[in-house]
Length: 248
Image (cartoon, rainbow, N blue to C red; front, side, top):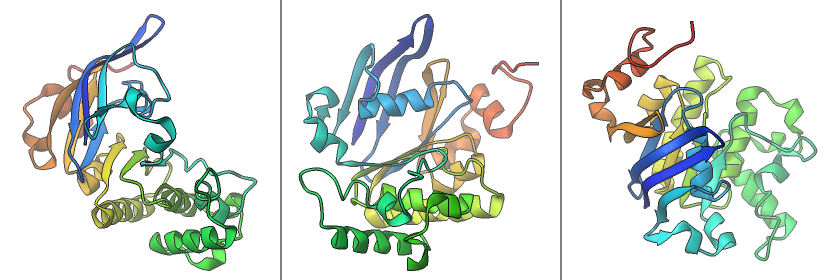
């Protein structure tokens, strides 16, 4: 579904991506792990075309990203942003239906609201939250609303950016379970970026570790604990000692 070859991106003297190669199969859940500042978010922004790569190729469904009509291309994606990134001035249902209310194929408000209520139900939120504002919700509820928004238009590909950051362990587990269920039910292709190993083990079919601007290791989640790669071993076990340099 997604094929990345030799992807490079630098910001001035900071070479963030140094030749990333990555394949994401159709209907599979790929989790990209790595420390802060290793380029995980830049990778997703390059796929979406929010950042222009310096080199390399990205193809989705066999077609180079830069050759696809922009609006139609972006319509295939959904995204759960870190921190949910809800619009404070809009009630919950309008946040969920944001895409559905805009553009050439916009739905009437009544229909868009019905879709929003259905997606809210899917993430375990009742109609009583629809007219509340984000500030009236807990962090876990906001994350669920963000997830409902990500799936509102039934996208083919969904990105999850640090989906459990800031949540307590129980709510993080709830979000992980929801992500796994929804991706499976929709048959969507998913890419998640995270450093939370509990999330990795809960939602991944495949894992790729990004370090030093390249994919150090990639494989099925079942092979993660026997990767044999010292960078992967240090990261997944949270060890201070190892090839990954830490600030002291």
